[in-house]
Picture 1 (spheres, one colour):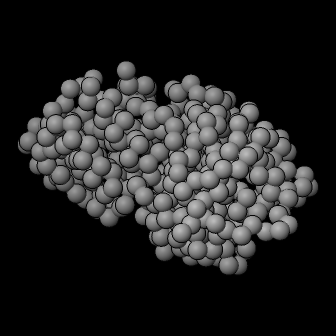
Picture 2 (picture 1 turned 90 degrees about the vertical axis):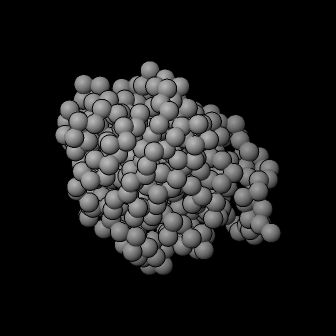
Picture 3 (picture 1 turned 45 degrees about the horizontal axis):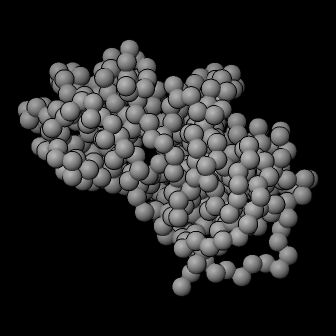
Amino acid sequence: MNIRKIITFTFLPIIAVLVVGLSSCDRVSEIIQPTAPQMAEPSEEMTIGVVLPLTGRLSTSFGVGMQRGFELALSEINSAQSNGANLKFIVEDDQSTVEGSVAAFNKLIHQEGVSVIFGSATSSQTEMVFPIAQENQVVAISSTSSARGLSAIGDFVFRASLTTDKLIPAGIEVTQAKLGYQTAATLYDETDLFSTDGDAAVREVLTAGGVEVLTTETFKGGDTDFREQLTRIQALNPDVIFVSSLSPEKPGILTQGHELGISAPFIMRTLTADDVHASGPAADGAITFIGWGIPINTPGNQAFIQNYSAKYGTAPNNYAARSYAALHILATAIANAQSTDPSAIRDTLANTRDVDTIFGKFSFDANGDAVYDAKVLIVKDGELVRFE
């Protein structure tokens, strides 16, 4: 049976060298370590694969922000030259599809020979590509997927986004205590893993907390008309409406709910400023459970926002922030491992504990999933602010 080797360390400021010791953890395999590890020399170049939805329906909502977040972090890391290796990217377009993501991973591993890959964007994609990375002992980090259980398939795969089981209970606890809702309706995309897993978790947590779920409605990713579902929900007069979907459908749901005169607040995960602006006044009062936000005063967050805005002429979205932070976390692991060997990087990533990031204190749990504080934001006058 596999046992994961963990490197225990005390963290100094980010991208600093850590004091590393060896301990054990359930998730690490008993893997024969190379007799001559690949040490990262200052002049060495390390190629990292990046799989992004550069075309297709997720290109605007996910792809642009993710690419920019990675690019900004890459420039900062290589300028600092503190990781012992100069990082470079090979970027592959997954065309916003599961099949495209699988093809991109296989190309990067079997043709390009990379040992670390960032991807994929969605949980549906990540569910299919993580086993490929694990089988080939390639480190894979998804900066944005968050359905439950995806990192538990092996010790080479990690995620920087708060997973469903961490974000939803925390968000419901905060909002239910303040709003006192006793009934709810849910609406979700039945074709997307992030959405189906999120809706299931919402209903589990609500039921356990004594909140009655009056109805659950579904739609399919790519749909643009949600009036029938919203009209049925409106007739039941729930206190709140939980929506589980990817970004492209969120503005339509909010706008059509507003047009129908629905007064119950909408609650949805990862509502971005782009979604809010696309929804116009219909977004006011909408609440989101999220891991990062512009109004959050975590270490380096305001500097990140300023630098990103100066470089790209627009504020970062959540997907940009997660990708930016994920690359900095990887660079720290490379520096601490003092090696470009994927097994050494894997071990150091697995032992990441309480690192200062733009999310706040960041750790990986025993499954390789992110641990940091969840945030709750609300839209007021067209802007996302802290829910208080």
